[in-house]
Each structure stands twice: as structure tokens, then as C-alpha cells.
Image (cartoon, rainbow, N blue to C red):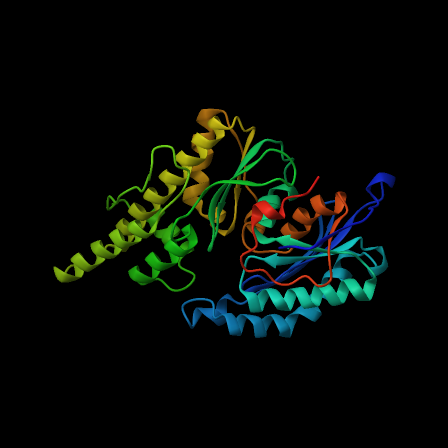
Length: 354
């Protein structure tokens, strides 16, 4: 449970808010300075993809060590690049969870030390709230809205009736979309990270292998992708048993069409049921061209306003953490310096209190 402290802010006086934000939940070390939750003054990201590619996935211990090696430099450079003096910062925000506990701890220790050194309040921030509020960096969010969160570890439909309030109406019951993409990519023979490769060949293929759709109960907004992954493996195994070449493009296209159809249909149904004004696409898989295209086409036909972040704000970054933390800063909801990393941090419980 997050511990919070109430304090005043400079919002009443009209003073600008400059948040130094830190994100180390997985394998990107990221630091940013964000003004008033919308204007990115600096946004540095150090990716570890090339390091983890050799292992076929993220190795938590390696990720933590790499965060340690770069976090101090990243903090210094982000403040310098922003043009803001440390004394002018309003707060320090950091991803508290969810994520890899060792990786989270590196960012949290760095953020606490920075907050104490500069005499600034600390804002422990939810990683998924960050992905959702990445949209705020480029668009005006209108409430109520529905957020479709699609990332490596999360697939969720979130209802937001007002700023900073989150209600989960649907989630994956097994694999997240990103996990399913990586597992299917590995089975086909693509290197890590596999999602972009599946997306690319799915668009290039003129043939398609028809695969099942997991709709679950008629009124459910939950998702399930483990059965689809098993269906892909079955197609691959049958081809190998017959001595046939694995049709990577056709399988990738069939897999992607199945995933996208379910995501789009459930998101649109939620928009109508909850009378939402906007649909927000969020998370690393928001960079998927097939999903972006399908949502744009469907929302265009339905007259629904769709918000999609630029590619640079889809994957993990610290600017999104600064955007989400701004909702807490405006209400003076700060976090105690004895805050701990919380890999299972609840999005609903992180909601603003007022």
C-alpha cells in the first residue's frame, strides 16, 4: 500500500510545475523533466534491448545492474538538458510499480536521494498510469474515457470517469498481449523482441492461417491469449510433422488478426456501454501498426475520438511518469520517503484521493 502525505502546491499561485521523473521498471533507464504534466523539456532513454537479445528476453539481474551503471548520469543529463535549475524543480516522481523489483529499487533509491538532496517532495507513480497519461503529452484528455492498455505485461481496459481515477473493467486472465507476441515470435523463429517482427510479416503476407478468437463470456471485458498461443504452436507442429515449411507470414497474420479483432471489439463495446468521450490507446504494443490501423478505421466509422501516443511515448519512458504524477502533484498527494518498491501495485488504489 502506498503511503501518502498531503502538502500544498504552487498551483494556486499559478507557478509552473517542473517534475523530474524516473522510470526503471524493466529494461529501459529513463529520466525526464516535464512541465505542468504536458510539456516535455527533456526525455532521456537508455535501452538494454541489445544486451537482453542474447538471452531471448529480459534478465532481471542484468537489467538492475545496467540501471545502476547509468542512472546517475541520466539524472544529471536530464536536468541539464531541460534548462531547469535543480532548485526550480517542483517534485521528483518515480515508478513505484508494477515492474521487476530489482529494477524498480534502483530508480526508487535514486529518486529518493535526489528528492532529499534538492529538498523536493517525492511522488511514487504507477507504471500503467504513466502509459495512460502518455496521451496527455500530446492530446487533451476528456473524461469519461476508456483506456486500452496493451503492453508486455499488461492487457487491460480501464474506465476513467475523471482525472486520476482508474477503474479496471477488463484484464487478461493469462498472457498479456506483449507476452503472447513474444512467445509466438519465438516459436516462429524471430529474435527478441519479437512483436515488431510479427507485426511486419503480418502486413507483408498475402496468405493467412485462420486462428480462433477468445471472446470469453458474452458480457466480459476480460481477455485470454494463452489458447491462441497454443493454437499457433499446434499449426507449427503439424507443419513440421508433415515435413512442410512453416509459413511464418501466414501464421503471423492470422495471429495478429485474431488479437486485434478481440481488442478492438471489446474496446468499442466498452466505449458505448460507459458513454465514454475518448478511447486512449496505451502501452508498448500501442506501437503495433496492425492495432493502430484497425482502431483508427473502426473509430472513424463509429465516430469515436481515438487518442494514440507517438511511437516515442508508447514504449517505456519517463515523460509519461511525469505526466501521470502531475495529477498527484496538483492535489498535494506526495509519497513518504519510506516508500518501497511494489511489483503488484494496484492501479485502482493508486487513484487520486480527491
